[in-house]
Length: 329
Ligand code: COA
Image 1 (cartoon, protein in one colour):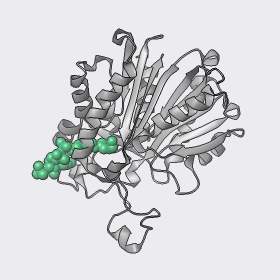
Image 2: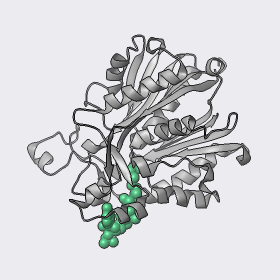
Image 3: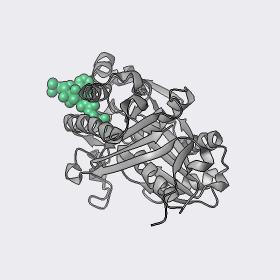
């Protein structure tokens, strides 16, 4: 087997829409309160895309910022991979729209469907292409416009989600000299497919007037079941990523921003404090595939990662799916 090329993260970028939606917004039409939402989730506000703004628009902004941070031109990209559960269209992929809008004229483009694990799946796939010498510069994005798929009559799920996009550029490590991807892992358990799902609108139940009237095209979530699944997988994945490495070398954990209590419970299990954990759920809610790359970008720009030290990324979600990565920053 040819030797594996070491892969690094040359730059990151993120974008969240301008419209800030505080918890109080939901008090107007749901039996809920700012206090309940803050206590049970840690969320204070989230961003909603403007009318006409869709996932590809968020991707383009995040992608431009990542390209700028990496000092790479769009025409130098070999591949654009978008992780999303809220594509602009069922067909074609959002990645193709992004490839065109960025002017990535030489790049292949495709989406990955792994829900909240979308960015981790895009990262893992992009890393494999670069490591195998099949691509040199890969733009990986996690992006969502969840506000269009939320059931605003369901207080158990409507308050959780937000819109946004985050991106990273992968290149051979000897080109960028930072953010080495040391490990990636992906997992799935499709027996839990209905923990979080959109029952209508696909091949199994094509859209009809009746299915739309019944709200079958909105996200349905078994919140408690997701909660239990999330707590155990977050702790396990962080442990798995750090296995064989010295915990003292850890500079930051960037977890899926799913619920502040889930993060805290996982940290308790690991006997860790939140000092080395990136948390921004209070501002953005759960942006699904976008949480990890937005948090990674904000952490990088805030200088929260010490060079040469370890960074753990982890996410999980519908499918069920999960994915983790260990980086040396
Ligand atoms: N406001 C007020 N009360 C609410 C509420 C809201 N927005 N949402 C649910 N409740 C009520 C429930 O109806 C229930 O009332 P009851 O005891 O009278 O039946 C009570 O609060 C407890 O509900 P429960 O679902 O057990 O709450 P919870 O503590 O598990 O919190 C979630 C609910 C959704 C916040 C939590 O389960 C969660 O974050 N799950 C993960 C969801 C997620 O992010 N999934 C995305 C993919 S990873």
